Every structure is written in C-alpha cells, then in structure tokens.
Length: 358
Image (tube, rainbow, N blue to C red; front, side, top):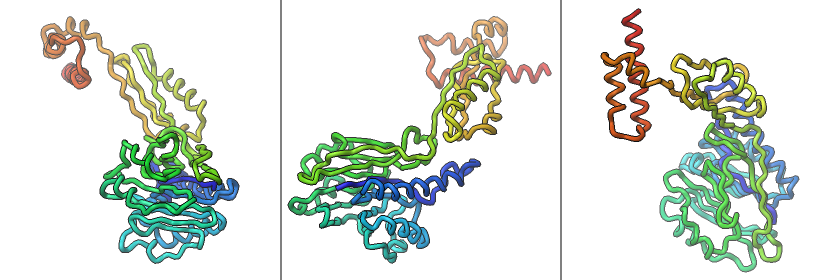
C-alpha cells in the first residue's frame, strides 16, 4: 500500500500579508496542494492522508467544492481528511452538510476509524484531543486481523503530542501520520512523523518543506519505505552578517546583495545584522527591499564605544559618572540587559550633549 502524508496546508491563508508578494504566496499554497493531488497519480498512491489544518479557517462551501473537484481527479486514491485546530468542526461547519466524492473520507467526530478492504488498511483518526493522548489512542478498538493500521492525528497548541512516545511501541500502528506542528520531525525510527506544512507559512519556518511518500510491505503490513519529497515553491532563508568597527554601509550592502544573489529571488529573506559597529556609523538598508523579497530586516548591531576614552573625555560630567557606575561593579562580564542599558544611556547622554551644544 502506497500513501502520501501531508498536513497543515492552510488553504486560504495569506502569508506575509503586508508584503508585495502576499497574493503570490496565497496562490503558491494552493498550487502546492494541487501538486500533491497530482503526485497521487504519479506515485500511484492508495491513500492521501491529510493530518489536519487543510484549511486556514472554517471552509466555505465553494472552497469544499473546489477541493472536491481536485479529489475527483484521483478516484483510485482514498483521501482521508482530518480537521485540525484551525479548521476544527463546529455546529455551523459547512463540512457537516457537504457531500464529498466517494473516494473522500472526512472525520466529523473527535475520533473515528476508516477501513479500506481492498488495500487491507485501517486509518485510526484523532482530531485535537483535549485529554491524555495515550488514553485517546489506546481507546481505538483492536485492529482487524491481517490489516495494516495507521494512526492519523492532529495536535493543538494547547495539547501538543507527547514527547514520550514509548507507549506507541506497544500499539499495532505501522505508521503515525501526525499534523499540527510548524517543525518537521521524524521520531520512533521514522515511524512517527510530523511533515510540517508543504509551503512555509512564516519567516520562522526556514528549511525544506514538502510531503512524505510511504509504502507498506504487502506481506507483513509494516512500513517498508518512507521518503521526504521537497515541493515548496518558496523558502525563507535566514542571513546573518556580523559587522565591526571597519564595516561601512556600502560594503555591507554589497555583501548582502551578493549573498542574496547566490540564493536567488525566489527565496524570501530574514536579515539580521549583529556585531559592534563604529559609533559614528549607521546602516540604511531599505534600498535592498526594492531588489529582493525581505520579510525581516533587523539591525541588532551595537555601537562600539571606547569606554576608557569617553571616561577620560568626560571625567567630571554626567557621562563619565554614568560609565564609571558600570565599570566599578565587581563583575568579569556584564549581562545582556546591563550592556543594553549602558549603551542606551551613553547614546542618550551624548545626544543630549550635542543638543545643548547646538
């Protein structure tokens, strides 16, 4: 039996909503899911397992109709659809009255199971349980003889999947197809998997995104093959540059341009500037946004003041007194908060002095 495992698609979401590429990202999420459906035909998948959060919010009837049209293109694939935290079933859910194609099974209760006789496979589905995960999973009835059993489950932020997964080793699941996590994870000798979203949904989600393709042994029903297939159209790339006293704005702009040019314009960048710069130097990097898609641009560099020279220059005024109050403390190293307070105080006092002189 072959299957494709995906989760957290968030159809209808607009990542980076305030950015010029927001609408493109919304369409890329849709295109990636269409690609997953197409993969079912190419791979010969018997099951498409969707472990929660297919929709970013409660789906409208027209959205359900659009997706059902997609599912009708893969009539030989059993689509098992599990609501998650973002598209959880409510009394007014359009899912309750919608009739999917014959090859689509949708969980409308907190838990339930689906058995597909021709592939001798049982899917035990569990959507965002509120109590003990172990108790909820153990509550499934005994599996049918000589059938493969897959756990399909979606987690919530309030009740994440347990870190201790040892209890699953005693249960007859050949694979646990999980959802509800931003981070892709493989546990229990790759039998317990969070695929994360097929497309990255926020700048925090760097790295490759895609789906899992698996195959069960036709004789034993055990997991025989599993591979991760990257399919994301975009990728968030974190770039960090460390500056020093000699770094000038022109050189920094050139370095960042070169590094982003290496990755390409199909990437979306998170830029962080760190290190200690010349106190007289500031960086204006907004011109980069005109040439590259930048989701975050953080200048966390600190002015590298010569504290000894400042103390000598301001030996009898407030600036010198303020610096000495930090230097006199019997500490080998200042904490991050103390360092921040020192730099902010010096900056404010120097600015105040310039204002008075002006």
